Image (cartoon, rainbow, N blue to C red):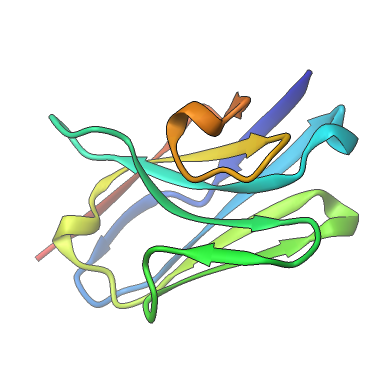
Length: 119
């Protein structure tokens, strides 16, 4: 089993920044890809971006969000800049034994952290 613990959510005004962290523990050797999804009220969970342990990056929020990792700490970060009200959602850390791009690819989920952006 793998445990994912997120931190760093909160409330910010439009144009502000937040950084989310996700620390993995347990059978981390089984993880190939880690990333982030988000889910706004009444909407489906959507892919934000992912980063594999090999360094490859897939990012659906180009220019404003950046994903990075610290392999030694088994931690992945989501740096969110120029936040907009439409970025308001619960953000979930995710991990999988293969490339993750959709919720069905995910083997492990974090508990979620709320990000609220006010106009």
